[in-house]
Length: 177
Image (cartoon, rainbow, N blue to C red):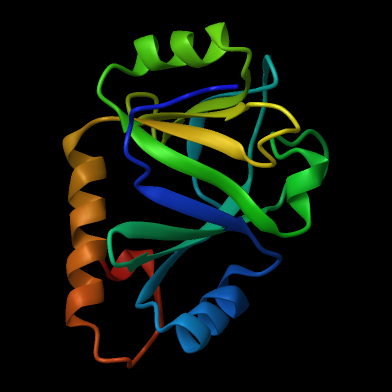
């Protein structure tokens, strides 16, 4: 089993519709605002060892010291999401890797299967990777490559949650300036 000294910065839940889920989470848990990003553009995508396309949408919110991601996997064919995670519940936990390649190797050496690696937005965009630690954990691990765009995004979400007045709980990621 994998053991990490890294702080968990995000927990993600598999949902069928990010808009509906964000509205529910906002109402139920007073989390907001959520920022929705639909059909997120990825490059250099490798799914279970094969180049491919991973189509997904996410809603991002913040609660106390944790980012909450609501994720919808739109893949019809090959998907990096294990069957056990596809229908709901915890999808993954995430942390920021200061040395992305070292962290990947560490996870692989501890028996985790890398089920997805990609760059966000463009070929040089931030890298992230999902790892399946096996049945005993019940969800994936995600690591992010540390960088300014990532930390700026997390800081924005945190500040937005502190200043949120309860209005407009679901927004489009394009509203971030």
